[in-house]
Length: 494
Image (cartoon, rainbow, N blue to C red; front, side, top):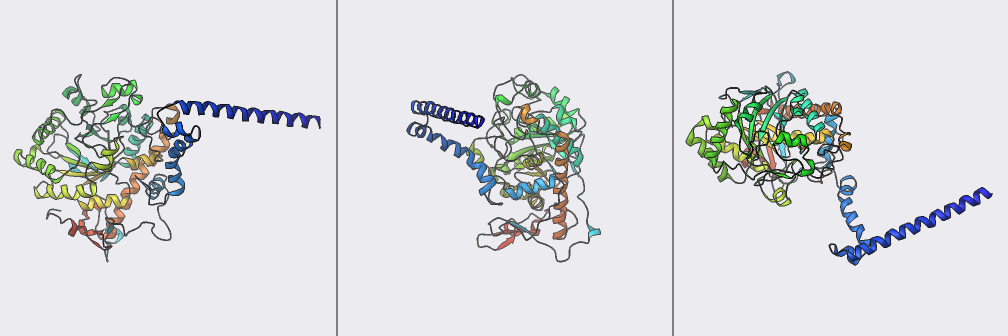
């Protein structure tokens, strides 16, 4: 009995102490809130006002896991993320009881199934495609679906290693992003597209200009197959890349050729390129120095702008044309950017791709300039739509981030990514096990390719690049769907 009494007395004292401590903390916070001048809610409602900030911060996570329907959330909904997750884990992607997709939404693509599709033994995989046949070292790309640009620095070392090794397993190419070529890109042995951003990271001299000696050094790697000159990207058209100083380690600084620990903001365009003619000169220069296919990446703003490119090619001749054009959608991408640019600037890939494909074909450049579609094309239907519309290849970044384990925490620019993908904090990176994630990356790519081939078979063609706009219907405001070939009439060459 005595022991029990002592225990109760101890617990009572402990409770009083805890309550006293809580009250003391509350008083301290209340005084601090009343004295501060930056937040009117906290100043007028000391302590209680803090809950508003906490609830606002937690709101996005509650919506993601408890309140948003499978097809509601942005930028990627739960259904999209779960498809990637199941594919990456090697699980079956069959579902029961019908689709959860609202096919009445305007713009929804619906594929036209053939009444008599090819038999299973009449079905073929996509053939390899040669890019830059006029270059000294052309590139034969084996896959129509590939890995888009994500820089080492923007993403972590284990993420780059897993993507490189996974790309090799799947037989797809990997774009370096604008951050230069790291040992971890080369480690996996996959085909690499080296992106030259406006800051010329990895191939710049002390003034930030293009260094041809460094360019040759990069091109000397056998696995570096192509070069991509980035004009703009969907996340921030009209503005250069942004890498916070907290993410610039000594190694990243050395690879990029920039100071350690300082924010690195790329110029908003290539300083030596004032017009389309200057761009063609830069393309020809890079292709001559490297000997390898050279193209451009851009987010389209208007038809008039792209016409200027094709006019310049027509004036100078096909030899100076880009070997490929990567079209990014204005919906934003993996890079951090100001909200007005993500939300309001740049044409969607759904509008840009058919427009540019038509212009390319009208100028007689169908076989000279290949089109690479990028921008939120993470599921088989997205990729199949792009190929049917006129793309020769599709690249994607965020789908591969989901394959790595991304949970869409929206902390990519804060160096606090909980999955270790976009952080250089060793604590978080420890959760990203390369040997596991490289398998998931390869599985996701292979499942995309397999299911796009399934869609192609369904519409009645032997392989995906034989799909045309006449194989896709697009839902209109009145609820009816019309053929995409009527909505976007195709040039005879496509």
